[in-house]
Length: 46
Image (cartoon, rainbow, N blue to C red):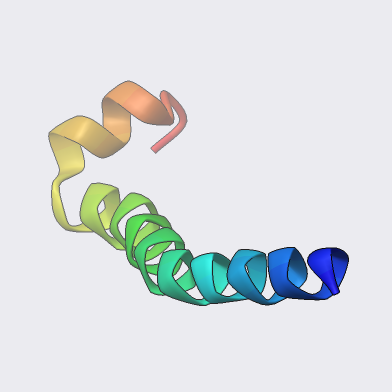
């Protein structure tokens, strides 16, 4: 019972954190492509 309840709470925490992780990932992917200065500092080849 203890393991089951901890697993459900951990799953609830993961479900709360997934949108934040995806949002940060999308920011990291799309923001440098919109801002060429930051993109050139991250990727010198661009």
